[in-house]
Length: 247
Picture: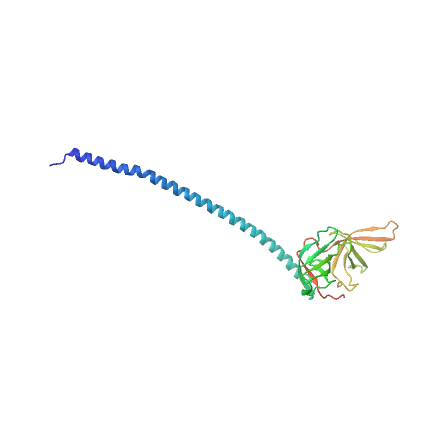
């Protein structure tokens, strides 16, 4: 029997409707898949951003440490290249602690008698005298700074040759020379160096520069205030002269 054109048309329409239905049904699925992929992509991106932020923080911290290490290395090189370092009997030490007592100027160093350190050994940095070793253990020692009130150091005026004793006054930025004759030739910025007397410190190492002079009430004596040449509160490494002989 011959198929009616209308029947064929209806069947064609039915096929079109079925296809359209599949398309309509598939659209939400595809849309859901696209949204899910988008959300997953955003979540992945967030994780990567967090990871990058964490990594950036770590790298920033490492960069800060590297900067500190570079600065420390520069100070270390300055120490080794200084005139002080020409002495062949030196030991480089690290400052590992300072006295918590503000009235005592003491350092703990990571070198002891195993390294040849002895009581009385001078302690210096690239700019001059810092102090001397007062206690020694097997792998550590303690040094008394020149600015401690219990420390006295034989010095001489590098310009005139006048000898004196520089004493600590409990301030990291000040030393004092007491009871010079009022006629002493002392001017501002005079450099005072170790004199070599006492057979403790070798002669010629910088100690301090004149910043102020004062005459006693009876005009008989002169006192001289010195600024230490060595920055006593910023160092990380020092030199210990382990077998220095006085000149």
